[in-house]
Image 1 (cartoon, rainbow, N blue to C red):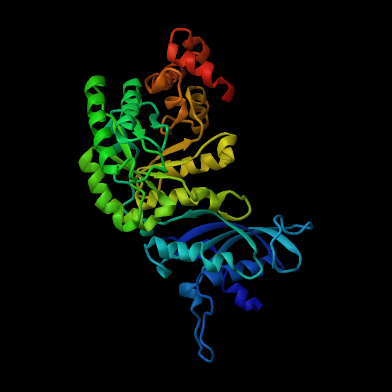
Image 2: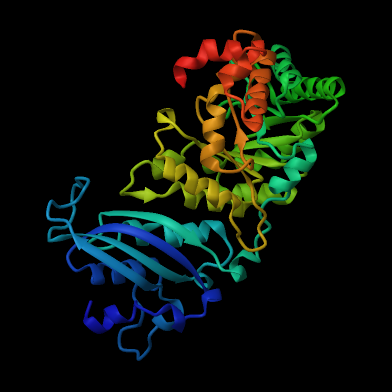
Amino acid sequence: MTPGDIAGFYAKRGDLNPEDYIELDFTFECAGDPREAAAHLCSEQSTAQWRRVGVDEDFRPRFAAKVLDLESEPRPSGFSIPVECAVQGPVHAVRATIAHPHGNFGPRIPNLLSAVCGEGVFFSPGIPLIRLQDIRFPDSYLAAFEGPRFGVAGLRERLQAFGRPIFFGVIKPNIGLPAEPFAELGYQSWLGGLDIAKDDEMLADVDWCPLSERAAALGEARLRAERETGVPKIYLANITDEVDRLAELHDLAVAKGANALLINAMPVGLSGVRMLRKHATVPLIAHFPFIAAFSRLSGYGIHSRVLTRLQRLAGFDTVIMPGFGSRMMTPEHEVLDCVRACLEPMGHIKPCLPVPGGSDWAGTLEGVYRKVGSVDFGFVPGRGVFGHPMGPRGGAASIRQAWDAISQGIPLAQHALAHAELHAALEAFGRRA
């Protein structure tokens, strides 16, 4: 690129109409001039060739992505991750904010993704390592999306659960049980105090536990639990499947007794989720398979908060995400970024409930609460409820007893002296603390 070509991919924020652009934060490592590399990044994801040969025209004023901010520093040691076929030259680490005109692709998630994290981004000349760190949408773009139907407030209203976290539980064993014993485990967990008993993300519509039988058994157990406890409960059925079956499975599961649905967001595809959102009558809950493949490396891929924002945009009421601690291999600051992406203002799009999970039990509840900094989160043990020595009823009770202690400012060990279920949890799982 000539200096004049490069300049055409730069702009001052004040010279642009912010309603016409989404903003993208990238970090990348490049060989050669960082300013030219950033111009290539803008070109490749938007205009590419911006005029015809022999014609006096320039597509860049209307169609070009433009660099708003750029910071760079040399990396004398070269690229932080070895990359075969990487270009040669002096290496720089760069942070860039880019304004991309959303008229290029419109309010269509597949086209958005093709532009901002497609070929033009990950095959941009001179940039072998790049990560999309964040994305921000103007109200004009958000206006075309419905977002969550229920969101945090709607989910709380359905459960009559206010002023505290929402307590989930992953029914274990997660995949091998027929419908009736599976339902009994859910029933016991509801009696112990869970709000939501859920299918595992791996449990599909399988011949040993068909969705129709499972939803009917759990639906009946849920109603019994509601009668006995006097409070609403949710059975969260996994309908992850081929896109052309989603509406059918929604109707089947809801008719049989499920009153919320789990979808593995990225394997199904966000456009499929957006389609289901228009059809759905119950809350939609996202799970995170495949997200680590995009987000695990800090120097490459897509930050998980971007995927969280997109799940909220597509219409999920709750986003289950990798949580705190070594089990999930996600830095604490990244978990909190995703929590904020669920809850912070996003135009007219409702907040969705963040559920940071991974090997949780009664003893980890306070840590999650303190880190999140509010009660607007879901807590989702698996073995911490269903592997409890006193069974799932005791496991669920231990979670509720832990919350009682936290909300009253009583140390767990002290509270456990008068609460057998919490005491048993501390004895059985304390080594995980």
